[in-house]
Length: 238
Ligand code: BV8
Ligand code: ZN
Image 1 (cartoon, rainbow, N blue to C red):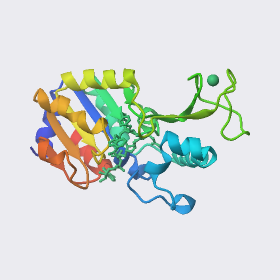
Image 2: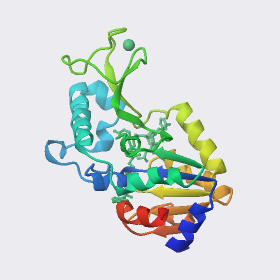
Image 3: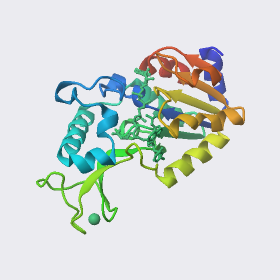
């Protein structure tokens, strides 16, 4: 299926879903999980820091890593890939963005229906009472919950933690009815996100992958476009 045929399938669709990973934010200057960590974070592996064990063992290091990423994201701008997905809403009756990213760039690009499978690093959550907040006072680092004095943590899903039930339910529903699924910038390695495209494949949706590299999903999709999301998505969306 070539790009014009994909553009036609999108134009005729009632419902389009995009499942995005770190690759959709790469051209905004936000490093992907697989990219080697830079600077003072070079000696840590992201998978080792994004865990409850790391936060329990070295809360300050984990908190500072998120503070560093929060600053990176605040200075980043949505790129043509985020904007092309936001523009889809003017053409397709139902558009759902299901993202593994925690950077909030889809919302900043104007997408109105974004399902955050792995949370958002601009929010914090109390590890004791679960209260979610978008602001906090430092010191101490990590800060304490104003309601119960428990320890605050980034409102993201770490490895070994369950995904938010509500987000998974919304993602599943959208994928079961979509006509077209775009899988953009994900290595398709992290579960359960990596298995979600099967829900669309199962009912015969057109599934298009956009990634400079092949992934475990590539053999199963309708079309796999080799290239950068910021270049290909504006062409595909038309
Ligand atoms: C769960 C938030 C039930 C935090 C993230 C063994 C032990 C314990 C657990 C497991 C295990 N085996 C499997 C598991 C389950 C585990 C898992 O899948 N592990 C993997 C590594 C094997 N999953 C979990 O733990 C999940 N929870 O399963 O609960 C459970 C409970 C207990 C025990 C078992 C199971 C929770 C997973 C969520 C983790 N949190 N993020 C934070 O961000 O700090 S995941 C994080 O990594 C990202 O959110 C993202 O999802 C993932 C990285 O993946 P991608 O987004 O795909 O990014 P990546 O860098 O990998 O790839 C970028 C892609 O973009 C590449 O393909 C590249 O080619 C492409 N690209 C680059 N540039 C561009 C581009 N594409 C387009 N354009 C470009 N310009
Ligand atoms: Zn609390």
